[in-house]
Image (cartoon, rainbow, N blue to C red; front, top):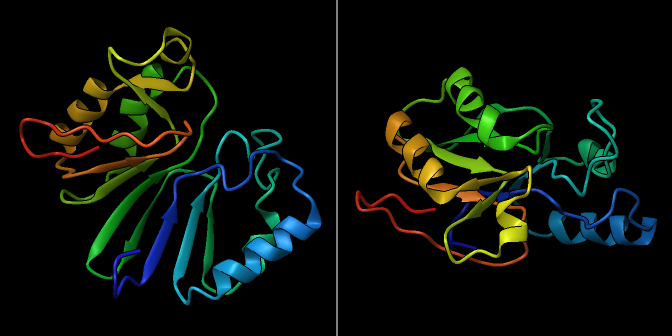
Length: 170
């Protein structure tokens, strides 16, 4: 964490199953409470049991002070930064993501936070062909069109960084 940070965003899949053991939920809550931060977690595909509101493994966190569960796209202001937060959504991501971002209407300069897979030519084909994956070029296009200097994405269990020619970072 950056020193002096007031908020932590988790880009989905806090758990790898929709029914984590109660002991794991309890320990996770305790660990996050000790951080003394505003914590936001996007509902990821592994957290959700269905697309119904509240039908996910993150329910116990909604009553924790300073903890926000993001189930639908929303804009969140945290100090001097605005986050355009988009959790896992059903459907074929390349077909809906541009419309969802546009409809959200985040101000220019916001950071885009998504629960999607992002790929390039080096990504294995089984991941590229996933319904919840988009090409890095599409994320760069969205960032350019909406004035996002950066996008933070979560879904796949590997860390990657892409740098655009215009300085945008994914």
